[in-house]
Amino acid sequence: MVGAPRANDRTLPATVVTMKLNPVLESLGSYPIATLRERVVARQRAGLGVIDFSIGDPREPTPGFIVDALVQSVPEVSQYPTAAGRDDLRAAIAGYVERRHGVAVDPATQIIPTSGSKESIFSTPLAFIDGGSRDAVAFPSPGYPVYERGAMFAGAELVRVVLGDDFVMRASNVPDEAWARTRLVWTCTPHNPSGAVTSIEDLDTLYRRCVAEDALLLSDECYADVYEDEAYPQGPASVLQVAGPDMTGALVYLSLSKRSGMTGYRSGAIVGDADAIAALTSLRSTTGTASPDFVQGAAIAAWSDDEHAADRRKIFTAKRRILERAFIEAGMEIVASRAGLYLWVRVGDDIAITDRLLEHGIVVSPGRFFGEGGEGYIRLALVPALEECTEAARQLEQAL
Image (cartoon, rainbow, N blue to C red; front, side, top):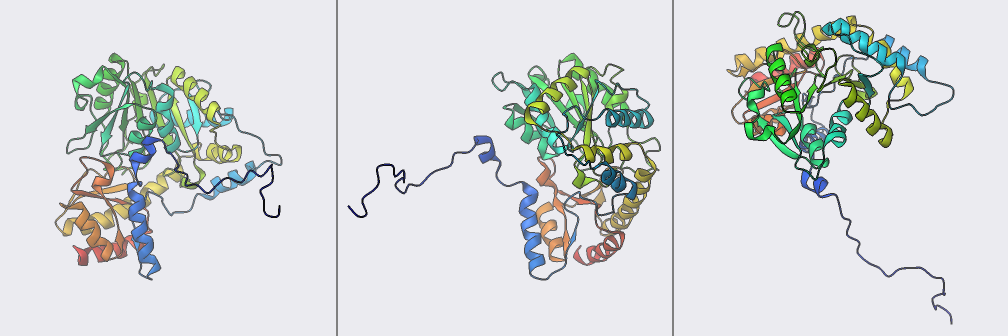
């Protein structure tokens, strides 16, 4: 009969399919900065200018010798990179660590290159957290949201450590009752968002408490080479300087994003405890997460040179001076901010000030975007060019 369904017709009746998501993903909502980006784009589409201090993505060109190294590393035949990374890259990272911190590390067992720091920070709890046993992850607040998000996806309990007014993570900040179940402790120095630097004494105390409690200390030091030379002639201290040669129970996270203007290259490293590095290598082999060989070639060049990092520090310091003067003249207090890529300003109502500045074309991040304890502050990423910072300072005078 014409129009009758064929015996092998597999057409299904119209149905409404409800997609089920991981409950953790559902609970997160929008990434906070993404909501601000939507407002910025709307302003730009309306033909209004913006000077954007919201995202830490510097606009200074990547040094030419790094670009050349990338191009020269592109192979004729493309093959899979290994999770452990190239031997010569791990050697270059070890050389950097020894120059920068005076610490010798074994390139074969104590270093793993990463595809930037964000993915490595997010995925680390997946290697160490047993989601069924109440394992906990402690992290500073305000802080980088990825500490919390990685812990949530790993099934960890959360220990949110609200920092004091100096925004330094100390062992005494972690509640005594939480230590027994805490397997991982995040710290960040220089701190994002405030730029606070943890002293070597506080790092030592925090490390020793972690070892005593059988917790891994995870130190996010992605801004280790972004600081004011006058404030820190030797640079901010590292957990690597207190952990001893074996680095038992310590992992340090490094990045070329701000140090070398390589945000789009996605290149970083984890350095520390050999057993923990082995576990992370196994995890990364499972997920197929590895930096492309040609990016690793560029990273070798970047880690092997310190002069370009010093030049970039001078530029960031010049931007900081221009902007902090405008806020100080408006009667607002700059907190910490002598290191890292950011200016952290006490403003009172951070949402109201963010809205007011956006009306004048200046885009900043409210402190509460970075978690509890950030209310009442705004963060400015020192990314616009010097001339834009000068223009922003003029606009700040009118807005504030």
